[in-house]
Image (cartoon, rainbow, N blue to C red; front, side, top):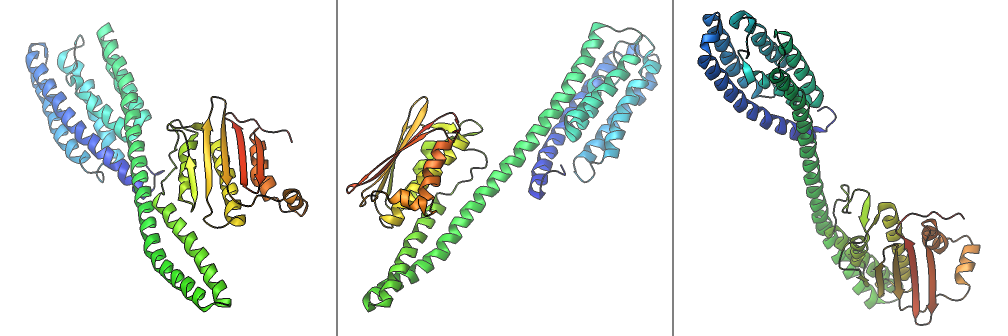
Length: 389
């Protein structure tokens, strides 16, 4: 458990505690079965009082070790070794008590308790190791190997590792669940703090904007800047309200991203309207992230050149082999030669943030611009096809 953080260790220990409580119940059931079987077959005992002593010993040991395992602090390797030693000892004395031609050992299925304790504590390899030791010991004590004996040992060798693997899986799931809960709680707290802090700031900025407009002159410019910051902070608050932890993936399959959902979250931007298909549009995560980044760059250009909060529309269309995204605004358009001039001057925002990204994905970009507005049409294949440029 050392590979988990503090919270992860607590979650893993909680799972282990529950499993050891279940093991205590199983130990009691197998003990009652061992007592009943030995009473029923008492005529097979060569030394009856020896059989009584062995059954009494495993009964006392069951009570002691169940109490020990109930607390994680007492659950040390030493006690697990002792548990295995008692199980092996009960097996080893069987030929002395019942004779060399015995059919069933005195502890019977009770030895499963020690095996499962090792599986819970040390997972797959602990369960496999304990199963090997107990199974080999059982076989070595027998004069003849029957299919029944072979079957019992085979089940031990299968059951021990499986239980160990399942115990490890349950612990990992518990740790992941707790991580997700902590992430969700942290996100909610960030959103709450953002609202508390920004609400106060927004009031001040609104006051500065209003008073600056009233005073005019340099104060009017200050008011305009305050108004811009107020709108940006409101957008941030809406984004915080929609925050979600995507570390566990947004797609239906690991490594994919729901492009429709990712683009829909751009609605938190002022003036942006997004239209997407009703169902999910799953694409490889690296493609989806790049497309969202390109659309974000287009919307940044709208805010910068048309105006903060200017209307913009995003439309997503999905096809079996590609996705098509349109980003449109109603601004004055891009003057002829403006993009080429910007690229020549070393300002590569459009060339790299939009065209470069889409071409790297093997897609195409079409720009339509004029006095009625600007529209970017992005066509991207749903399978990565890197460009050769």
